[in-house]
Image 1 (spheres, rainbow, N blue to C red):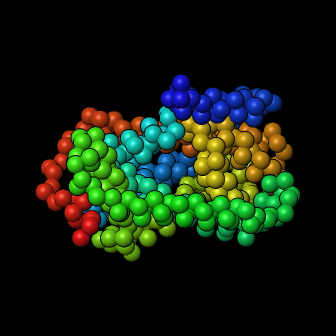
Image 2 (cartoon, rainbow, N blue to C red):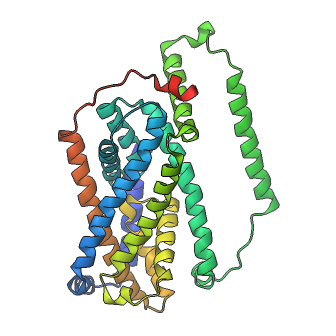
Amino acid sequence: MTHFLKRFLPLGLGILLLIYVLRNVSVSAIQQQFQLADYRWIVLTGLLTALTFLIRGARSRQPLLALGYKPTTFRVTIALLAGTLAGMIIPGSGELTRCATLQRTDGVSFSQAVGAVLAERVLDFFVLLGVVCLTFVLEFERLQRYFGGYALRLPSTTGWWLLLGGLLVMGLLLWSVQLIDFTHPRWQHPLAQRAIGFSRGLRAGLLSLRKLPQPGLFILLTILNQAMAWLMTYSLMMALPTTRALPILSVLTIETVALVGGVLVPTQGGIGTYHLLIGRVLMLYGLPITQSTVLATFLHAVGFFLNLLISGTGFLIATFSVGKAKRHTVDPVTHANK
């Protein structure tokens, strides 16, 4: 039952949100946007999307190099595309699919790949916080209206104590694990050994960012990845006369709200969530609710199709064309702990 809810609840929620948002929107109004669109900008958006995947693949390759593996940027990008397609079908499955693909094609330890992905996600979270703060500084008045006009407040004292307590408990758990003697006979059971091996690989992956072969390149690729996300949204908005007339800061607001919404309400491919949130964002720039919803539907439909096309191509390549690479003799766990 729990597995069923995890798989289909996000889809059901997305469909319900989509029905709610589009209840007063006609199909002809959406079709009209596709007739008015300048498809040169859409083609450019597709090329930028493909380039962004390549940049993300090059960045994801850096922690794997730190772990002692030697996959090419192409193979890491293909695994990333396969994971993106899986994530569009089942939220949360993209990272696991990417790690499983790298394990199959390049012999990357699954646990270490998961740890490396988690490390990237932690870094991306702080980058997202920075983008959110920048957006609030530049568009504070609009975002204040977006969130109902309430004054922004810092978390209460209780909230800070809860956060501090959680971090303290996590630190104590990590410290206590260090004191366990895993050579004791009770830890020699095959299942225990598998769990210990997985946890060690996960730890090695999480710490991989500390030993990057080219940390400057990794930081540059992280900045480029965020800049490309903004550029793709800008390019897509240039495809329609209405969104083309909006101020350039609207691109930053749309991208930020879409990213935060995707984290808070993870539905398949942003279905429903994007339409609801971005439709309200566009209203902040003087557009009526129906037109805002239609434009949000167009932006999502084109972006979703481009991601589906590119990631689907990558998934087919990963499935039928990418064979197993020659495995290296370097022990990644030993390499990571040096």
